[in-house]
Image (cartoon, rainbow, N blue to C red; front, side, top):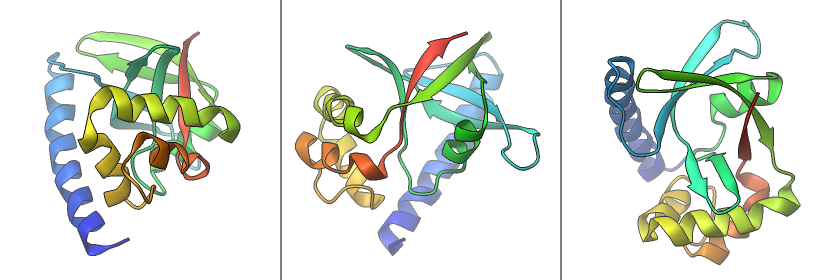
Length: 149
């Protein structure tokens, strides 16, 4: 990971601590929710602040960093819990096959502004911040559709 990506990750981790505290206190904002999923090795619950994106074809969670622990945990689990404020719900996170990811990734960048595309370049997941550039990185970016159980 580049120095720029490491610096960005540290900033995000600090912000995530704040988001987690607020959400646990019942205060939520934007697309941020707490994802709780069993650890893939320990089986113990692991909680991560995550953006649940409302797109034209449904609700999605998209990987923002390489080797994100939550991605591996979700792949190993059958269900997870999402919490926004005081509301909790059990969900199934269905990983999209690589061939189905490009339109979702394109919409993520198109509907959320240029900073989102730049984030994928900064973290090393995409080589171009454009909607097509991020969509071309579909094999490196996990995308999960959120389904109620």
